Image (tube, rainbow, N blue to C red; front, side, top):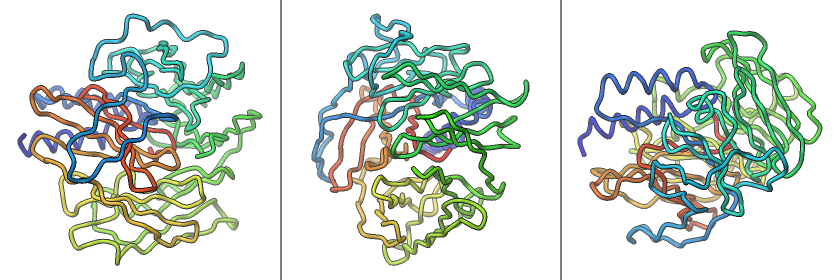
Length: 377
């Protein structure tokens, strides 16, 4: 596997991974088609609520794949049994995915049944659909608007865009699945933000400074941000300041990871911060410098900003394999492991658990870029 090939994978995963900015994602994918033999569409939205636990040692071979339902394998073909999602309650889901940018988006229920997610535009739905951490709520685009449906009941919230040239996208779910942060934007810019309380439908506008990076949504409805210090320059950083809320009620959490990192590591500049269900955070460590954020470890941080643990990610063969950050379900930090060796082309979704074990969740097509709820977009 050449360095150009690895770099193209990384760049497309970084630039086209945001389903909150679908026009940008599609534009990047088209540009890569023209300029490179590698095509890695960013189309897969994944949320995990179940899965077998597998203990994986850093020096062990790959563990057996544990699919979450029929047909969720390394195949670009939709299962023949997939039917439109019924309008009635169907129960919680485990997975939302699309095998490719132009493939139909599917939802996999806890029963293993596959259904097609409602779609006005196949590519837009693949980029825009997402699932709450508890598997109860499904969001998907409806034209320029966003629908959020309760799969266990009959609630459907529709959040309309503010104008014909604007769209509504999902920025983050709270880790308790009680709220969702939505952005109203034009061409990925000029964003305005709303927090929707899913139980009541109450909407609250929130102000986020343009220079701040949104990294999550807390169960209180407070938006979690950090100064965008890890942006285009990709400078090495061993410290990070998180801000919960806005205005006079905002509070800051300072995290100093200096003594937890070696000189070749940095706090990841892309998808680095993930709120946890216990009120703390998970921070992703990556190599520095590099073409992309090759992850090396996960730091567990308590609510006061104190680092309590470091979990190293198993070493990998960088010639035919690379890992990238997917997101977090509030407990496990999720990674996609892309394998490119002939006969082994696939992306495996792997969860790094707080107890240090790895959970191999499912295997998906090699070209899939995976995104999870509660992830900064």
